[in-house]
Image (cartoon, rainbow, N blue to C red; front, side, top):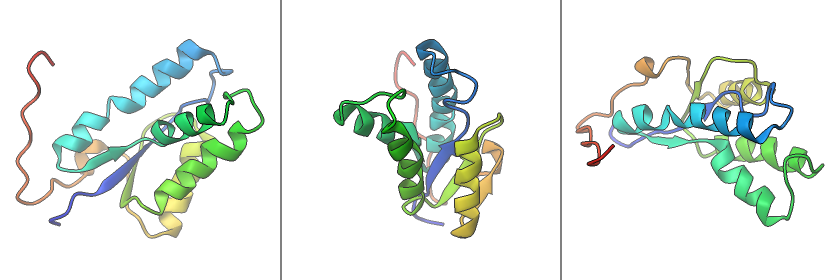
Length: 132
């Protein structure tokens, strides 16, 4: 494997939050905590909310808006056609379970542990930025 994989990080975002902004933010931070380990292995981390939330906002809508159902899950579905693998994090999530189902239909590997993601050949882990 010489090219980096784009790996969708899938896990709970809205599940169990009742769309409480503090809980949503905490769930997004939990997803984002895996961005560095994926990147460090030489790959490109992707989180569906990084794309879906700005799309929803640009439409003038929020998570409570009916439009959210037409943006949040479909964004992840579209992204999966550009991803090479999925990292499924623990926790109840209808969306993440759907991501895994679609990934398997597309023949993409699904990892449940970041340690199982292969290190890209000829890849040198980047040094962390000063102050990180």
